[in-house]
Amino acid sequence: MKSTCLVGIVMLVILTSTGLTGAAIFYGTERFTGDIYAINTKMGTVERLVELALSAPYILVAGDSPNGNAFDADNNRFYFASFEDPGCPADISVSPSELYFVDLSNPTAIVWAGTLVGHASDAAFYGGQYWYIRHGTNDLAAVNVDSSGYVVGETELYDIWLTDPTTGEEYEPYLAFGDIEFDNEGLLYVTASTRNEVGGTRSVSGTFNIAAEQFTEIGENAYWVQIAFGEDGWLYGHATGTGDFYRVNTVSGAIMNTVVSGGPQLTDIASENCGVPKKPNKKK
Image (cartoon, rainbow, N blue to C red; front, side):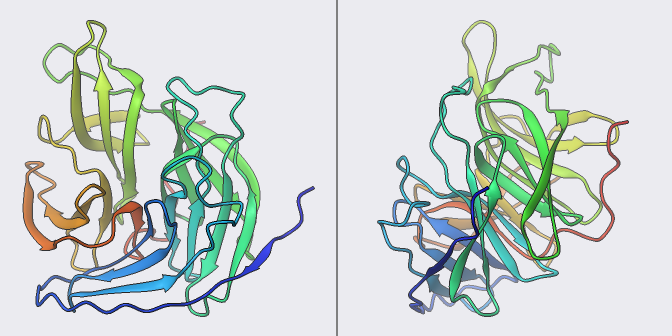
């Protein structure tokens, strides 16, 4: 069994005033470096919390690693996963993701939490569990963690099928899921790019009701990339290519005002504003 890995880290802080207003604090891992940032859209600050060594085993396995960010607000733990793209559909010969966390109340070490079944490039923490879609599949999985934050088991709960809202045609699930996030009622928000049987591609955003096993599209062609809820109740999106943060209208799917421009390019984001105690109803 793999032993717990505590790796010393260096803390750096960068504060950048933007004069923008909002009400959300987000955490994320930076593309290529893996550094962990806090973005405060209310104060207009960008703070680098943790600088990770490039030689560390969980950094830069392949390009944009690490990924799969999620935040356990009850324990102030920020989770992230190593990520080597297994392709679509997933190549089973590619090693699965390793899950890690940092205690943000005292971020002096990276803690290895365990090995996942699949590859985590999008994730959320809800009801005491780390949830992710196994990259290269449409399998939504929940990872049980103990009181110390370590992985104690993983359960595949649901397959998320995306369908054309006009024809009802099911899209191939393997092109790319962008991110997932729960609201405080247990409704899962999903971003994805899809491919249909005749080779057409499109970007899709919507919700997945776990109890009803139903995906509902929000706004055709809307694609919010990384997503997380702010403390103001708004859903926020983050575009890795530009570093921008913006608000999302969850009724129309429209991208609203940009609240941070040109910030760090994050592979994924998380916040402490989702994850009420009640767990979603599991399939029996």
